[in-house]
Image (tube, rainbow, N blue to C red; front, side, top):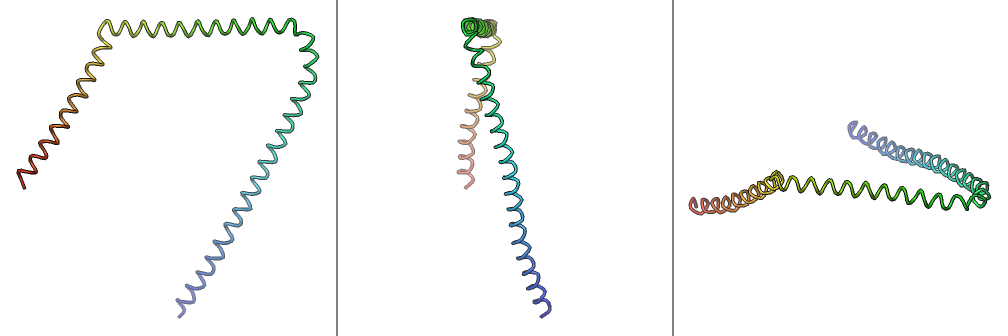
Amino acid sequence: MADQTRTHHEMISRDSTQEAHPKARQMVKAATAVTAGGSLLVLSGLTLAGTVVALTVATPLLVIFSPVLVPAVVTVALIITGFLASGGFGIAAITAFSWLYRHMTGSGSDKIENARMKVGSRVQDTKYGQHNIGVQHQQVS
């Protein structure tokens, strides 16, 4: 009887402990979410206000200097595009010449041919190996 009472008491205490912890965890999660969300909302508002102020200050300067800035931006954009295109074409050419050299000297083609041979031999081994295993089982039975 004492064992049954103790077991019943333990079950009651476990149930109340399990109910208390999820509520506490939910409260901690909610508090953390509110704190993080509020902080991010404040930072978002400050960023928006700073952007509006900077745009308000910079707009007259952009209008005054636009005859100089627009051609300068276009020129810089064309120069950057040219350098990037030149570098990309150079890398492509080096890659093509490297592949061509490896292919002509045989180092690249040998690797490809060796890989084909290995795959082919594995396929044949698997095919004939399964066939032989099946034949052995039929003979033993």
